[in-house]
Image (cartoon, rainbow, N blue to C red; front, side, top):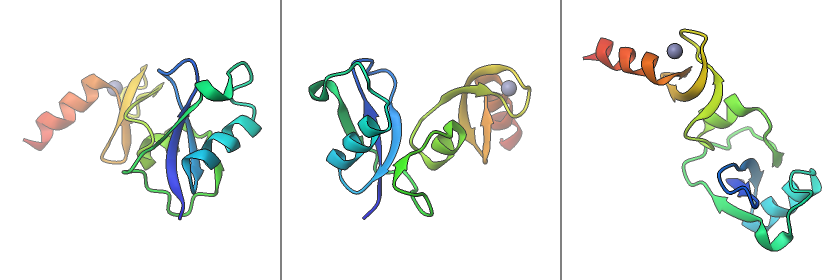
Length: 111
Ligand SMILES: [Zn+2]
C-alpha cells in the first residue's frame, strides 16, 4: 500500500516528501534521487505521515511543495500567500495556501 513519508537527513528541520510502500523504500528512493548526497545512511530518517492523502500520487519524491502542503506532508511551507502575495510561511486553509495574517482574517470571516 502506498503511504506518505517525510524523509530527513542531518538537517532534521527539513524533510523530503516521498510516496512509498515502506519507510525503508522511502529512504532508498530519496537517496537514489540525490536528496542526501552528504548524509550518511544512518542519519537519514523516514517518518510515516499518517494523514497524507496519496491517492493518485506516484511512488517517488514529491517535489511540488504546494502539493505536499495540500496532501498533508507538510504543516506549512515557505511560499507566496494566495491572498496577499507575501512570501511567508503559509498553511493550507480552504484549499488555499495562506500566511498567518490572512488565515486570521479568514477565521474572523467564518465567525
Ligand atoms: Zn496573506
